[in-house]
Image (cartoon, rainbow, N blue to C red):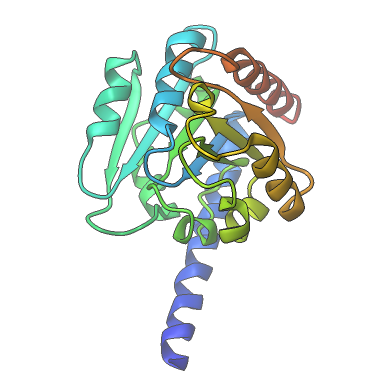
Length: 223
């Protein structure tokens, strides 16, 4: 058990070193980098599809789409108008790591991007420990899940800076409470920015787009 812990610490340490180099590269080119994390089926890909359709060509968007076995998400993003898209198929691994991201963006012209989205594998446990060099970790939860998710997976919500509550068009079909999930999330991380929206109806998406624009301006001001 001690050797397993030691090996894991070494792997994470090496990942953090590479993530630090990635963060420096993104900063050099003024690229806002977002790591989207969630349970499977929360609507990360739908959110990115809506973002591509609404914000291009106003913003230049790059996307890395992680999945366990397929490149389905990447193909959806290409169909939605993505021009800088790279799939990562982990072959069973429950998270992306900095090395995977580094390889995936090898052909990206970072100087031409405003935003790089990293769509992580659907999992609220493993991805919380792996730094990908991102500026902001965005947790996505849907109204088809339990509103106690933040309490069950506190590490993820503690390390996120923004929370998107998706599929609000389904409110009322279950006992899910927006107020409870917000209360639970803020009890873990009182600094969270919380956005409520529905990719299906479009309600609340403008708030997400405006938040992205603000973050892009903030990132540019740092370069």
